Length: 264
Image 1 (cartoon, rainbow, N blue to C red):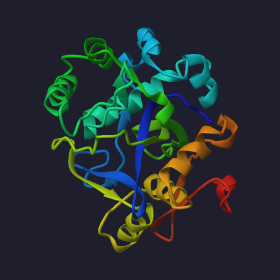
Image 2 (cartoon, one colour):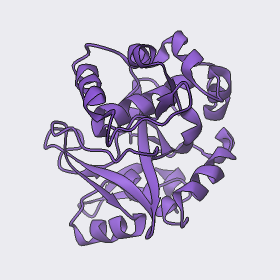
Image 3 (cartoon, rainbow, N blue to C red):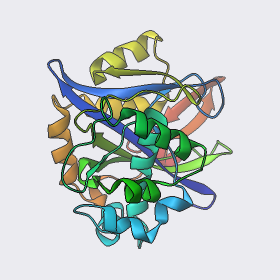
Image 4 (cartoon, one colour):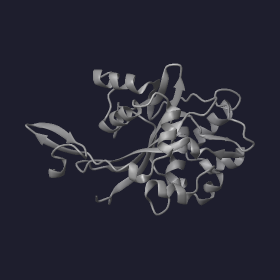
């Protein structure tokens, strides 16, 4: 697979468990491309700040070497976990971090105002994640995150991404809220209900979103899914490169394992 011109990216399925079972946080993008008016998960390109070597000292239970092995990379794997944390905070106000003394952040209460200001500064590139953690004496919680799937943008697209999907379990005292700019709507919803709304056209989605929801729907609880994914290796999560082609005037898509995929 030619990975030239592929932009590394990370997307996060934030999960929580309620009395109704597992729920996932879905967001609706604004009308701007490339995912205008679609329901997706928070995420974006890996930023240069995500590779800050100092940030490894703030990460519990995982090193760059361990993260890289998890993703089948020579180095730089931890940047994907950091990108997940940064993107979640930027886009939906969820921060996978805790105070160094072990206390939870209370982003729904006493810490809300302060961290709303940090979020705005981060979005405006006035501060980075490492600086926020240093100023507030925080440590990150990468142990709440696990690789989930790996999708490559089809070759027919001009802008192509090498996207690692992760799952992340919602910290205590946090709910999340879309940024109102790139994201115009957010909803906590069960994977099965989201799939129903996708089929009805109420929540338009692209193939990777649908397939990731289908994978989530095989589990009753987000906590179970997180533990399952933590036990997997890079070999258990192969890259998926969809192939699209026109047949009888209509676009059709194939995934690895589908009949005819290798012939395209």
